[in-house]
Image 1 (tube, rainbow, N blue to C red):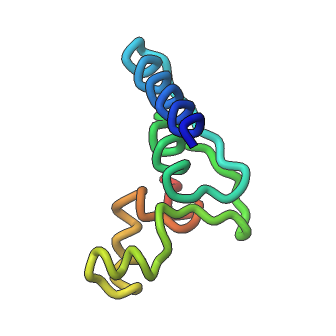
Image 2 (image 1 turned 90 degrees about the horizontal axis):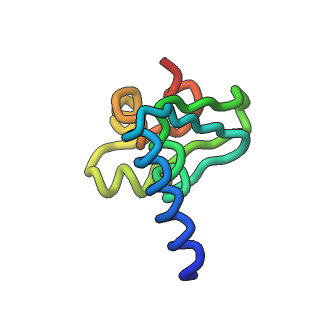
Amino acid sequence: MIGISLSLAASADAYVTARQKGHPVLGLIVGNAFSGGFLAHGLQSNRLIALEDDKIIIQAMSKASAARITKRTIEELAEATKQIPAMAYDVSVLAH
């Protein structure tokens, strides 16, 4: 468990250091992106590239959990994902 936390911290530090030195950070999603891994790696990118495939799921937490925590309906949550990338559930929401 400690190894996972240390490697995640080292990765996040590397992303920050690269950005501060003017290097673009690119993220690539080729499968499902969930929770802390998506937030810590994917959203650290200057540009996030993902395969367009209906089987790919992107989420920080389940729709039911996010709705409960934000005190919104799932329908209201779906609308919010258009403005808040961290709440996205599919690749098309992140595409701009």
